[in-house]
Length: 225
Image (tube, rainbow, N blue to C red; front, side):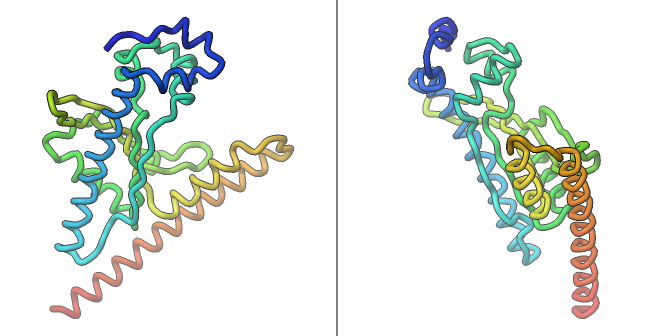
């Protein structure tokens, strides 16, 4: 792919609109959309298999998102990546995102392991914010995976960011994200402490719900035997 003309983008009043209209960029976004669909389908298949084998669905919902041109430009400038399709592909791993919301914490690791066991998936990076939460209380399992997409005339490998969370973790992260961008907050430290406390409470709740599920499964197993 040809490099973008950074000087022209820089002079545009709305560089994100200019970038969106460029065919190489449009093609690249199409590749990322295809990669998102591939990963989403893999999780849907795994969920369906679980439903048949174990009579339950470990996945509550799956969300996908493609980074917007304005966000891509902002990150290119901030990280000094360089305006070329090659530079974007090699340095930005969060353009395509798939968020998997699981019922229980152990389902997160089960689904992640099953995805990574597939022979066409390559793990690029793994960050476990469940075992090692962020300072603000954020918890989630992040994976960067390399997935192939099969086009009419070629096979391409694309990077997709996968986030796996419980329902409670997603609830907290969604509200924290909204509150983070509120302006003119005088008691920010107090709010941060409260958010951290809520994150800890939610984690405790996740563990309790998982224990209850194990108790129910134990009863069911003994009843059947």
